[in-house]
Image (cartoon, rainbow, N blue to C red):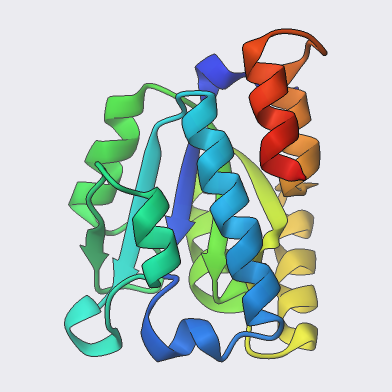
Length: 179
């Protein structure tokens, strides 16, 4: 089970024109906004990545709005793992459960997932908060990560898993968030 005290959210490369080319881009962005808002509700650390932002552009505006107070980490490799700043940010959280989301599922998310798994992290794939240009590539990317040992979840399931208890102010805020 996910624990808010042990979990970090990693957002991979939802940037520029490429983000708008994802299959189901509008729904993907809505789920990412809900996920990030939920992560903030549970005070999860957020590690936000951008692939070559000087070439691919900045993170989508609607995501930047809910990521206020956080700064993106620029990377050059498809996987985030070779990036010293990423590894340092992850280490700083002192957490081993990773909620992984972003684009493209079969490339940057996949390679980051494999490196996280190879380095002892418990990776949870937020399937409805990741995308590829085609549904087939997304499905294949998810399958490859599951075969490597990652776990599958979705935004609503993981937020209720973090909540655990159906009472209180956080629960009320969570209900408003998912409606």
